[in-house]
Image (cartoon, rainbow, N blue to C red):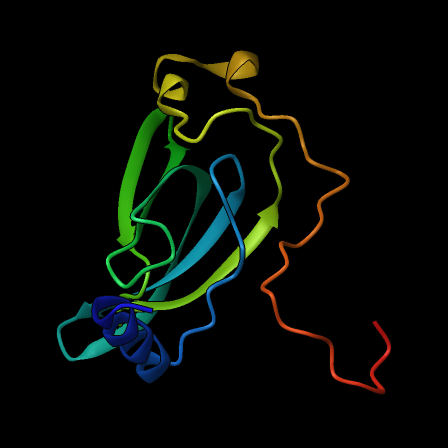
Length: 134
């Protein structure tokens, strides 16, 4: 492992965030901390993930798109932002490309994404602990 990857791994471990496995096409709910005056609250932003950039690293980000009152709204979130409270995957989408920018030009039924019913979590390379039921 080179030195840059080592430093990134240390920074990610220091943050202690639990990022779920999601990709473009998945419907995701992001709890984002909003500060209004002296108060801080968590505001949920739920929509379709249309892109992931820079992978799993510390510089990673993802774009979420939703339709709000008939208008398309997109928001880009840094993956390891301190303002993100939680990320929840609502449903898995079955898509064949990594960037779903074509959804910007679509409305209604043509903008739907089929659900992936036979999703398998990706293997992280860790061996199961002996004695645990897997």
